[in-house]
Image 1 (cartoon, rainbow, N blue to C red):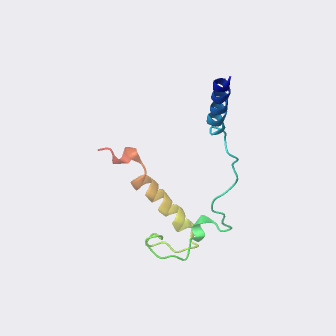
Image 2 (image 1 turned 135 degrees about the vertical axis):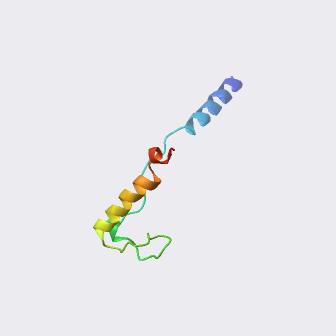
Image 3 (image 1 turned 60 degrees about the vertical axis):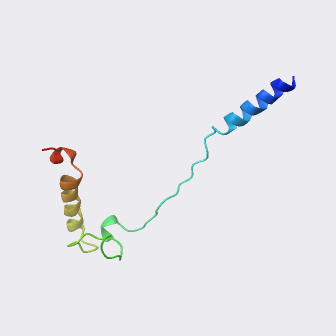
Length: 76
């Protein structure tokens, strides 16, 4: 009897650890567009780019995508 109750209690505790926690919205919240940038100097800002220049921001992203993140372009 005691052994059965102990097993039930341990099983309940083990399953309680598997419960999903409540997820709340967290993270960075910014009212600015990404191309507005921050006021930090390199290495956080690409050379040749000025904060607020949307066209330069988009062209830098395209170049970075093709040169650095395209695995097919890296294969000889």
